[in-house]
Length: 480
Image (cartoon, rainbow, N blue to C red):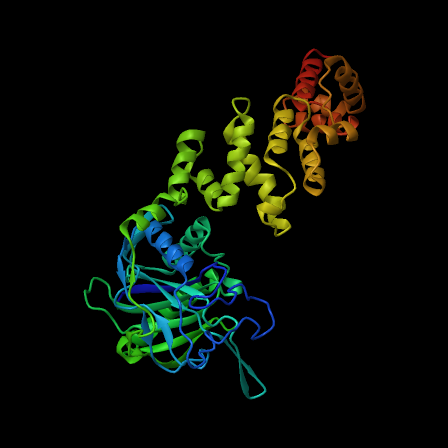
């Protein structure tokens, strides 16, 4: 019997605020010595009271608006009670019944198809500390405890591992565009949990839900879902039950492993947080946040296609990262009407991306400014240098940040486009390669590529290849 997966996701996003969710401690604690970013409030000392972080609320509202959510004006924080060894007060302050954002959606591209994933809610809570198990002892670092954490909960609309991968990568793109989080999974700024069940294809009944945790990369999300679908399918086909449990993903072994039986929502025993008043948002404030939203990736992609004549693929690649899109737009401004904007895009997504990926470098750290990149492309386009010289020049620009004009002049890379100068070189090349001349005249057209290569070699790569080819053809066809 064929089965279909029903998948929902919970994505936790650490917000990039200066202070923690309910106190003034620094929230920028990654990589710092343990327990150095703590205070009586986040350590839950008697008599201390939490205060809501206004910037965290704003970041969550921004995210909700970007995800097409309804922003609720009346919100309540609750205590989520079950054993929390990594929170000093033993419970987590979170939102449940009245979250900041609800009923949104996100569209994702999966292959040639576009899918809509509904968002149930986006709510605010505090992060937990970090447990470390050493030599039979458990140690706790509370630096992360209390950092603002946004939880984005989807409906069970995801139908495959590839859709889940597209969904989480798109979420990260959006929070980075908004500037509310780095989304760095390797630093714990974004963590994913999957709820997955199988049911007979075409059935309306849900199967038994299994939660998968410890997904610390997008690759893990995709692989864990693929494995869990396979595992549950094997059980069902063997007539065995699937139990509602929490599974952990073992990245090394490539399997899920049972951790504990799954709690239901009522097991968390939510009740309104008595130390925090209800959070009421003014409609004017919500509108102000909405007006401040940056241009989002889909809108930017469509504008790049319409205004710059780019195809969907090129536009999508360029808007994947907001800083890359901004770089390209500066290059567009520098190019004006002098260059094809598709040509500029080709350079950015080609040689530029190649070197950036090799160096594992962010575009903000690149030394080549957009104006110099456009100048280099213009030198190729006008015949001042050829492609070979352009790549050599670009390599020096990448290392030094110097202008292309200065490098070309210094290294003597200007293209030889003088017909009389090249004619002498062509004569020598033909005289030194009589067999190739005979082969060409006998109809072997590919021989011309070899002869062009010899001209390029003789001029140390500076010959205009189009002019060299024309001169070669003219002399050989003339019987010279």
